[in-house]
Image (cartoon, rainbow, N blue to C red; front, side):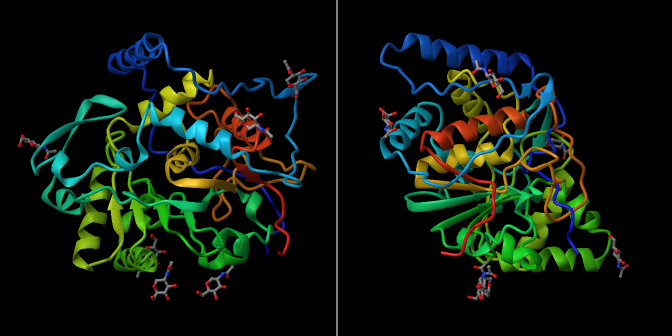
Length: 356
Ligand SMILES: *[C@@H]1O[C@H](CO)[C@@H](O)[C@H](O)[C@H]1NC(C)=O
Ligand SMILES: *[C@@H]1O[C@H](CO)[C@@H](O)[C@H](O)[C@H]1NC(C)=O
Ligand SMILES: *[C@@H]1O[C@H](CO)[C@@H](O)[C@H](O)[C@H]1NC(C)=O
Ligand SMILES: *[C@@H]1O[C@H](CO)[C@@H](O)[C@H](O)[C@H]1NC(C)=O
Ligand SMILES: *[C@@H]1O[C@H](CO)[C@@H](O)[C@H](O)[C@H]1NC(C)=O
Ligand SMILES: *[C@@H]1O[C@H](CO)[C@@H](O)[C@H](O)[C@H]1NC(C)=O
């Protein structure tokens, strides 16, 4: 029985450290210099109202998908602006030729720590970007909020040309509400501990292999270079993929992706220290999707009529990113997405889906 609807957005929860390092400060300065130095640069400004309180009380935003219409010229402007900071085709993954086995790299959000590129990891790096030349009319980006429970959105989500999901979220038991297609799915290394018992026994490994086998040749996107801590899990995953000859197409975000995404949003005065996976996925998707529909994004513990919403639709994790003071700025991200919805740049569904 799933009486309680609580909430979330999928997050890069492995990123436990604020990344206020010198390197980043430098790269921000660099980006800012690029911006002020380029007279032609005139990005579409996307302002948001940064207050989510009325008379000191938290309010949960209400909005409607009724009468929503895409603004295609705005979509094109946003794609163009984002392309000044990153090219999703390239930054979605490093490729084989970027490294050789034995190379030592610095973690993106913890520059003092290093990672050795193993033979297995190297053999799983794609030869070319898994998103090269891929273009879609419609894409769904599915966050993991409990707001999806009881939504009946499964069929509508699966009807998109390309479906993006986060953190290897389970689908089969929830297909009616979340759908069951995944063309692109992210996986934080920490999910091995959280959802697959840290591969303590054969049953856990078996369950994991089956989950990946279900993905066929979809893209499995693993942020392996963010912070130290998950490398052992990443190695185990690599081993299982190779040993079982799984067809899933592994991808590992480029070392500059997070900074570039953050830089883009900063030009719009949206200061997001650490973009959530959901916001990263939207930002990447602008490159290859003409129309982006978001589901399962809801960073509040209650819905708009006050009913509790689970953090994740599939587990009992508690809401940790309430305030804008935490490294992820879910409420600010949400407000931004809502503003983009109202302008017709994307469609943000937080209500039930109606049968077409
Ligand atoms: C921002 O939103 C809050 C609550 O929705 C509202 O009370 C406030 O007037 C708004 N501020 C501006 C500048 O629009
Ligand atoms: C669509 O977006 C463009 C570019 O941002 C803007 O100039 C135009 O007014 C928008 N059209 C509608 C119908 O909102
Ligand atoms: C990484 O490689 C270096 C040089 O080959 C080696 O000294 C070091 O022990 C390796 N570290 C790990 C964690 O494997
Ligand atoms: C899920 O997958 C099954 C089998 O491929 C399919 O019949 C079903 O319609 C799919 N969608 C939903 C929402 O269950
Ligand atoms: C394997 O570990 C899981 C917990 O991670 C446990 O629920 C399960 O019973 C274990 N299975 C066996 C065969 O030990
Ligand atoms: C994977 O392929 C099998 C066999 O072609 C198919 O039945 C299944 O629905 C596919 N799964 C996904 C997630 O596309």
